[in-house]
Length: 216
Image (tube, rainbow, N blue to C red):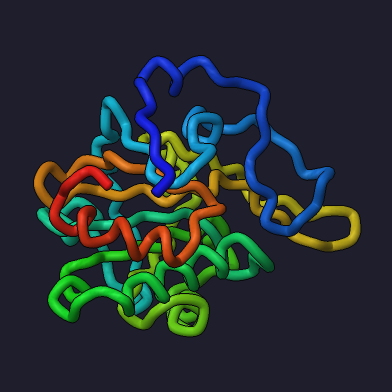
């Protein structure tokens, strides 16, 4: 398994890189978060974990979802993306779904996967409810809400997202960091990051340890 430890200092020195443009447009550029600069391989174990953000959003049933309260003491993977993404987002959800199905049933029941939209204007609760089971797994939680709230929560975890932007050809581009952050059931802290090139097999190998709150 590829892994490395990232020290906190590396999270504050990177600059002038690029966010993921899920539309595939090379012209959509912007400043990246420090996490994006740090994550080059799967299983990046943080020297100083992230505090779980105080995010209260809306789930696919149209009900309030308090992220801290609902995932407290549970192994949780959080990813920011959007349903109209043609590549990175559905691939990431698919890889997580495949990896989850390889777990023992008891571990499947423990694992929480949370998808937070970066395009809340289009990603309504109904849209998320329709997309997540096909792109990922029916057990995954989809969240939407006010963009400013989502952006602030992402920043607390070192993930940068920009407001969706319409290009000249009418394409709407959502710029966002494409990392999956794993939160420990022991500490509720985000202590492991995965890059967008992480395979289903790599997730499957690590998830049992993530579920136990151990380093992969």
